[in-house]
Image (tube, rainbow over all chains, first blue to last red; front, side):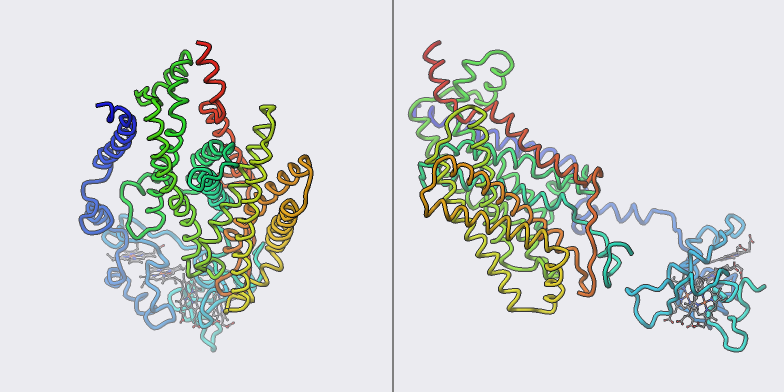
Length: 165
Length: 392
C-alpha cells in the first residue's frame, strides 16, 4: 500500500479537478435553457417568444385600404419604393383601429435628413443634399411633397407640396 | 468630423477596441513569457536561472489572474460572459480560447505551483498558527505526505506538467496573435506571422518583467542579486529579443516587398499617426537601444554595478517596446479606412470604463496579486522553514 501512499496527494488534486468539472456540468445543466440547441446554436423557445410579440408594423398593403389617394400619389413619385412606415413609423395599432391612435406629426428636418444628408458613404447616384445650404430655413415639405418629392420644373415645387396647402 | 482625415466609412470613425484590448495581449504575453522562463530551468535544466524559477511561476499566475479583467470591462454585458463557457460555439476562436485559459490556469500553472510548493505548504500548515494554518491546511488537500519518494514523484510529474505547459503557453498567447492574424478583412493584422511575432515578443516581455521583479524584490529583501542568474536571464532575453525583432522586420520587409493595395495607406499611417509609437518608441528606443546595450554586455567585460543598471534599463525598455507593439497592432489596425482613403483618431478617455485610469489600474493590479502570492508562497522559504523546523 505504501506505493500508493506516495502518489495519493496527486489523486487528491485530480479529484479536485474532477470535482470542479462535475460542478461545472451540474451548474451548466441548470443554467443552460432547456430548449438550447433544439434547432441550432440558440434557444429554440426564443422563436415562440418572439412570435408572441404584438405586431407593430401593419405593412404597406394595410394603409392602401384607407389612404388610397396617398398610395396613388406615392406610387408615381420618387418615393414609390419607400414604404409608408419607413417614414411614419410602426402603425399597426392605427391601421387596425384609426381612432385608437393618431400617427404623430413628422419633423421633416429630422426625417428627410436621415436619408438625404450628403455623406460620402452613400452611393453616388442617390439624391443627397447638404440640408443647411439646401433648404434655406424653410421646412422640406414647403417645396417637396413628402409622398412625391421630385420638383416639377414648371412650378419649382413638387405636385401639391404638403405644406403648400 | 473631428479627428477624421479623408474618407472613413461611418462604422470606422470610432475605435471599438480600446486601450484595454491593447492591455489584454500585453498581459497574457507577460504570462506566457514568465512561464517560458520558468520552464527553461525545469525542462532545459538551465541551473543559472533557478533563483527566478518560483518567482516566474508566481508572476505568471498573478498576471494570468489579471488577464481576463480588461476583457470583462470591455464587454457590453460582462454579466453574460460566463455563457461562453456554458454554450460555446465550436467555430469561435474566442470561445475555444476560454477553455485554453482555464486549462492553462488550473492544469498547468496552479498544478505546477502546487507540486513545487507542496513541501513548503505542508511544513507551513504545521508551523503557522490561526487562520493561515487553516489556509495552508486546505492547500495541502489533506495530504501531509512529504516523504522523499513522494517529493521525487512530484518532481517527475512537475517536469511533465511543464512539458505540457510549454505548448499550452504558446497556445495561450499564440491565440491572441491568431485572432488578429486571421482577420483577413484587415491588412494591418492579417498575416500568418502574427501569432509567431506575438509569441516571441511575449517571451521577451515576460522575461524582462521577471528580471525586473526579481531585481526589485531582491533589493527589497536586502539580499544580494545573483549575478550568474541575471546574466543568464539577460542572455536569453537578448537572444529571444533578436529573434522577435528579426521576425518583425521580416514581416515589415514582406509587406514592403508585397506592397499590396493597402500598402500606401499603411505606409502613410506609419509615417504620421503611428510615427511616435511605432518608429520612435517601439523600434528606436524600445528595440535598438536594448539590443545594443545587451549586445555590449555579451561581448565586453562590464562591471557588476553597470551590468545591473543596464539590465534594469533594458528590461524596462523592452517592456515599453512590447506594450508599444501591442498598441500599434491593436490601435493601428483601426485607424485607417478599409477604403484606404482616410484615417481616424483614437481618443482615449481618462475615467471611463475603458479609460486610461482603468488601464493603469489593471497594469498595477497584478503586482498586488503577486505581492499576495509572495506572502502566501514565498519563493525563498526553504532555509527559514528548515531552521524553524529544527528549532521546534
